[in-house]
Length: 226
Ligand code: SF4
Image 1 (tube, rainbow, N blue to C red):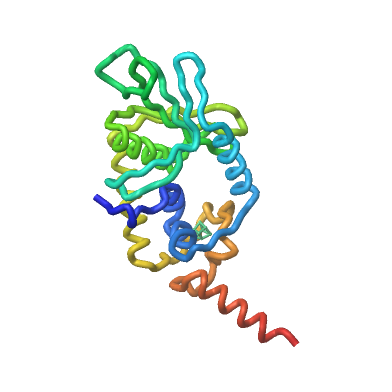
Image 2: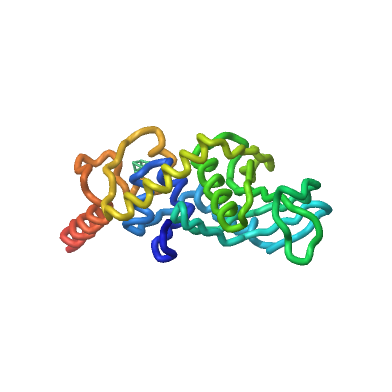
């Protein structure tokens, strides 16, 4: 179990699965660069959080819910948590002041069109595992909603996905504790990566931190000034 002070951002999971260096640049070196994709993604998340909660028949929707898992050592926000009224009184949770039992179904908002992304499935699964820990229930599935196609992919929280989520959480703590940035592993994923101008994936000096490259670039620029 982790202490509150040791929790890392749940959003770091999608970075570490995409690329360990990207995770370290963002969460160890505290660097960030926007691209059209990251700006679109941020707007989708902001829109998802605009209304705090609403009810539609047997579904209640909570938005922007804070989550925390001491077991995984993560905290963050869920875009949407749907609560579905269920008949089975042995499952789900109670809602204060509302009759019946309710099952919990997290939904993560992403840009683009419907597709399967393991990084998104792991991030969603971590949200579910945090909700399970906080609410004392079992959450069998959730969904990733894709803003461009207005469609969502259901994601069952299988044993394999839960194990991948635990491994990703373990790895981000390991990298954060080490305080060092893994070297780049150039590949097709670098093309759309918003961090590539800071990462310099094709640099021959692969052991260096991006912040070191930045300092060198600034020093070289100042030498070049007349
Ligand atoms: S540019 Fe490539 S190596 Fe660098 S952070 Fe992005 S994906 Fe990783």
